[in-house]
Length: 119
Image (cartoon, rainbow, N blue to C red; front, side, top):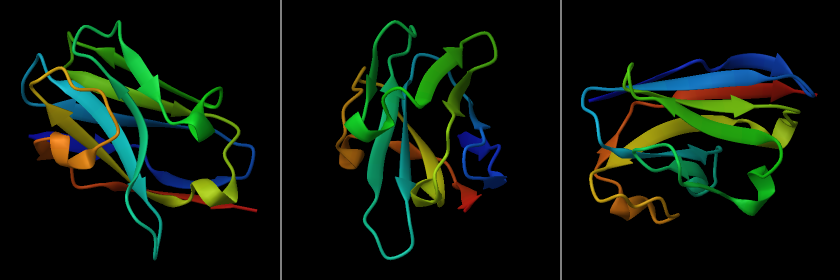
């Protein structure tokens, strides 16, 4: 139900925009990431209307989450990327208007897209 895309290789300081297409509307959506050998980490989330957003502290000011409900798609704009941002990025969804950090509260997950930031 979720299809993530947009990952790739980028140099430090560069930007990428990830996309996540959902098969249905009225989902709250979130982005998580998992680096090799590390636990899954919350990145950002957005309510289904797009008004409410929430970011992990370390992402504020560099990442921006948005959505286009006409396309059932959520975006994660990532700027000033750092090597430590290297991870597989996953989009997730829930139908309860939850935009928090607990990954078990999200019911649906995309397949992940790899972001590699070179130094």
